[in-house]
Image (tube, rainbow, N blue to C red):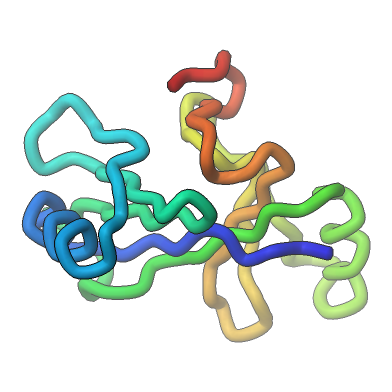
Length: 130
């Protein structure tokens, strides 16, 4: 059964928001961009929370997408075909960690699909990184 394991939030201050989740919910840093103000991935050991920079204000701050860990991405795509066969998940760009594909529901809410999960940094097209 697919499991919800990932959520991404956009913010103008990734460090400040990450500190909030670490201090309030005792989340730990899973991975952090080397550049100041970059992406910070937090975890509670089960769930992955991505804090994404929103410097360009391409979208409102807040919920951006969520992610499912699945046994078979192909099976999910097959299930989606009955809703809209012309709008199926697309491969994520090389080098993006965690998810192999991104799709959207019938209202346009984005979600990631990952077979390897959200606890190991494994860039698409790349090798595993800790």
